Length: 185
Image (cartoon, rainbow, N blue to C red):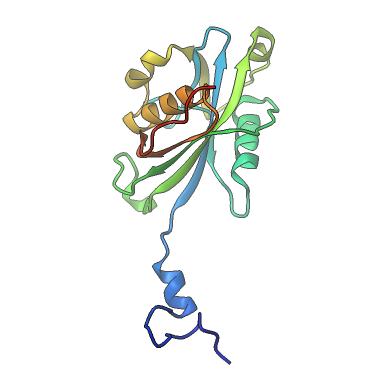
């Protein structure tokens, strides 16, 4: 027996499960982690596969929660175990974003930016960049991000940095806030 979700109803508003599934957006999911030092400079990675710098992070694996992916990526890339509990930003990255190999068939992405905290000199000394992927890390002034990162990445990192002083996370589209950020506490 078919349920109302499996067949069109008299008003024509229901669709088959297959049609519904086909109508949904397909997007990648990624994570970044915003880490600062005690001078409020932001940790950026120099990676072997890009000319621009990145926050620590990467792709979310199948069936992996974003916060778990963020913790895994920090461990893999920096060699540091870091509990992840606070989201600072969620960004929709359009499929038209430049820089993706056409063979990757980039469908667009949702990127969660998590708060990695403010690290002291002892935590910074514990960083062990992943050989072959991470050439090194630097703490940079937030004003320098646009010169060092791809435009959308810089906008996202700065929005997350500013959201850190608020009670909530900012929602972004291509690194641009779509709603006013929450007020600072």
